[in-house]
Image (spheres, rainbow, N blue to C red):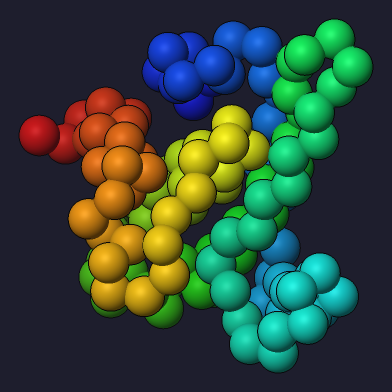
Length: 122
């Protein structure tokens, strides 16, 4: 479903796997990869291929999504979709600023457009 929806972003020539990790494994991956100690919600690894296509791995932590969503089941579901889209956009070459300005950038607006399409939001 994400591939079909994100086709306009170049996902038609990409294969992205999404792996769900518990908090301990996500912390360990964050520490090994970025030397950061805390829990993070999503980590993405793009792997460009010689033929120009992309392979990517996206790791998502439901416990972090639950903590960040601050809502019930629907809010958690939407946050999981948001994280999968966010990681996929990173695989496709998008990036964002850190800090408060990140929600005003192109990546965030693109992400939220796809989240609405995937969750049926308006």
